[in-house]
Length: 229
Image 1 (cartoon, rainbow, N blue to C red):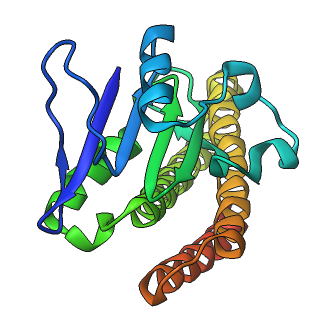
Image 2 (cartoon, rainbow, N blue to C red):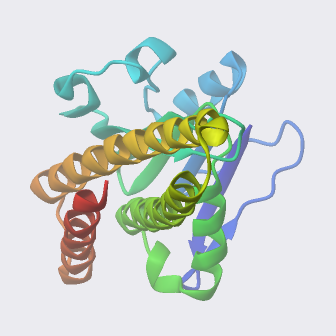
Image 3 (cartoon, rainbow, N blue to C red):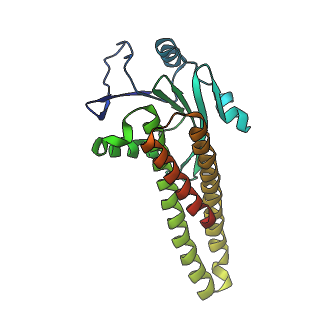
């Protein structure tokens, strides 16, 4: 699956393609979700970019997740996907090359959908590839903040049940605590990963004044959330 976007008259607009129509050269954001080998080849040929394979995306070493090469800036960052029964962290590969942002991931992510909705009403969120990249991370951090708030509320509810009931109900509450611990651990990993990604963007991108301010706000938000995990 591929989603293509351009910036027209200051607004992020999705490009609609007919079947077998060539990919547009003016795209500012190319979003690939579990693409077929044929689609990957078309994107690489059209935009002269090499997309990482699954093994590369799964690497955990920092030098494999944040680096620069002839294709531009590469970031592999985890996004918490909590809309299934068991929440998982999904790694998204970002490539910033010649003003265009390429994103590659195996699952549809709510963070991406919510960003696209927000960008329709706030054009400043998607002026170019870098602003789209920052906007996706802003939505990621907002999502993690909501998860931590929900977890805090859930743990308070569990504590009230544990303190007010007999041992017959303890097993069920322990299962709840285990679920909260699991999602909180994944949220913390995602926050730490976002912190490293934003710091990398600041060091290796030519950010304008607005992008600098947005990236600094992001780091402050992450710093304020980490103690809650």
